[in-house]
Amino acid sequence: MTEPRDERQVRSLRELPQAIEPQRDLWPGIEARISALPAAAPQAPGAHPLPVRGGGARLRWLAAAAMLASVAVGVWIGRSLLPAGGPGAAAAPATSPPGFAALSGASALDAAYVSDPRYQRQHAQLLRSLPARLAALPPPARAKVMASLAALTKAKEDLESALGKDPGNALLQELLVDTYQDEMRVLSDVQASDAGRGI
Image (cartoon, rainbow, N blue to C red; front, side, top):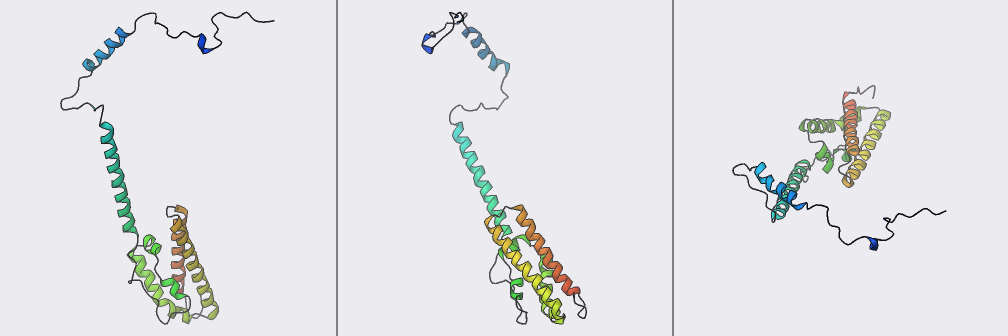
């Protein structure tokens, strides 16, 4: 059983007519609407219509200038966060215990994330008093403190290395700040400890 075929059904594109004239002429209505537009929306005095040609070049120049300004601001912010490193880094005292030199060395990320002068003063003061405090501790407590400080130093180095590869990683930044705080806690506990009792 075959269905009766509609005569208007098209089996290929070749069967379509090449041109179809509209039932009525549309151009007079389009022309009337176009000519009515400028009269309906008069321009404010001093306003310039957007140029049809050449406006793209102006926009490209503005986009390039904005991009250069963004890069300049980024460089300026980056330079203000990075340390000025060099000969001003604090050295470990000559009487310091083994492993103490790694604690006092300032790295690039130390200065970037720990730039508060109050923190730096307190940290330096705790490091200066650390050798004397460690000498006053009993050997088991001293070993415990040195192991904690060595672990924190290693953690800081690992985090700084990871941040060097991925500086925008917020989790690594937070972990590094937590490590700084843990180091300060250990140093403060050593400072507050009673020489006879240990930590």
